[in-house]
Length: 279
Image (cartoon, rainbow, N blue to C red):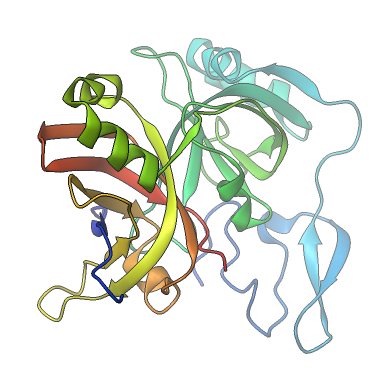
C-alpha cells in the first residue's frame, strides 16, 4: 500500500500591505472519451462528454432497498461471508453509519470514504461513488446515509456506485480569525480544542510549493492576530490535485483529525483534509 503524502497548510497573520479500474472508479470520466460500464453491468443512462458524445453509466439494481446500518452490514459478512454475499447480490443497499475516515493514496483518482464497521471486530465499509466528487459532501464523524450495490470485483462487503442520500450534523466550523483570537486571549481556551477534531475556514493569503519538497504545499490564511500561528498538515487531496488550484483570495474549509497546541505560539492541525477552494 502506498503511503499518504502530507501537505502543509499554514495559517498566519498577513504581512502589512499584503486505466486499471477499481470498483466504482472510472478514470475516463472527465476525459473526452467514451468508456465501457465495468463488471459487465447493464446501463441505465448515458451522460454527455465535453465533445458531445455520451458515455455509458452502469445501472443500480431496481426494487426496494435493503436498509440497515453499516455495522449490521459488516457483521453479516463477518458471520457468514458466502451467505451475506448471496443475500445482497444484485440488491440495492442503503446503509446508515458514521464516516470512519476519508483516505487517498497517490494512485487514487479521488479520495475514498469509509463507513464505520464494528470497532475491533470488523473492517469498515469502503464506499466507491458513482460521482467521485461526492466525498466532499461528508466529514469524518458525521452520520450519513448512502445507497449503492455490493462490490462485484473486490470484497462484496464494500459498496459501489454509491450516492449520498442524507448527511447528519457535523462539527461547527471555526474561522481562522476566531480560533487565533480565542487562543491568544486566553491560553485556557487551548484545552477546548486540544486533541479534538475541528473544521476551520478562512481566506487564502498565499500559496506556494517549496522547491526542495514536491510533496508539500504551503498555504497562508489570513488571521486577525500575529500569535499563535496555525500550521495544518493536510493529507487530502494529493499535491498534484492542489497545485495551481489554491490561490490568494479563495475561501477554504479544512477538517483536522486532531488539534495539537504545544505552546502559546503554535496550533497544529493534524491529519487534515482540504475541501473546495471557492472565490
